[in-house]
Length: 157
Length: 157
DNA sequence: TAATTACCTAGTATTTTACTAAGTTATAAA
DNA sequence: TTTATAACTTAGTAAAATACTAGGTAATTA
Image: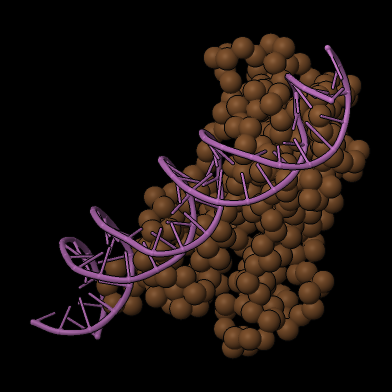
């Protein structure tokens, strides 16, 4: 699993889309202005998101982007994997000397951990985030410790 | 939260240390050879790990590295944050116009999600990984679906 | 004293990130 | 039918991160 600022941009943009795409498509220009991401970088990200059918583009005036499917059906893992493309980590599949060496063990331990992180993010949908954003007060007004995702946290606790 | 290949290297190296550091210190040369990471890059990573007291170095012949504290007391989050240093994400703290804009909401949603990932990785210790590695058969010999971390997965399910 | 290993600093090739620039295609509205 | 809009595409690039090489110094053991 890989989680970089690129993935963050993608999730942020998708969140913006989910929040504003209720009544009509959202343009990349809007997202660019809202989130402070360059238009061209967004286009690059959305090319990847479109390839994975996570968004659907509508051309022409009044056009823009829609979510490719319901917000419940889009996980955070989906989004991150679309732009950061999932790298299958080096698994020494019999190629290198393995029995007795620690290398393979640590690799497989990491792979398993990586899979756990993936499954964790797979469980959180865009709709989960949006729902809690709508329930809560406006983000900037709330206290730092007062997480609106605390109930999601319950899953991991 | 940030999760890059750099963090992966760090976790891998710490795992190696935990697995082999039972009877005496482990040299970076050993880890370098075991895990296929350059010695100098390991030194760079271990400088960061040492700064956070996650490892303890012993100089001279027969020297090497020990874990800085018990493997139960070292979380995966600890390790990743040591080398990838936690970036506090842009939170528009009253600076920009916030009420009414979506920007702040999506930012705080991301921040909350990021915190959830952190808390998830905070719950998994080095000892958890090592314990399961010792119980299981050698990594390369087991089937792909047969995760030795499935019980850890139970926390998130 | 010599070998070993941590520890430190500087430089660098490669890759990734995030962007600018300059287009083309499809579509809605004029 | 023209024009404006906005998706879509490609190429290039500055800056940062990644992972490494090289060449040291300092502490400790044999």
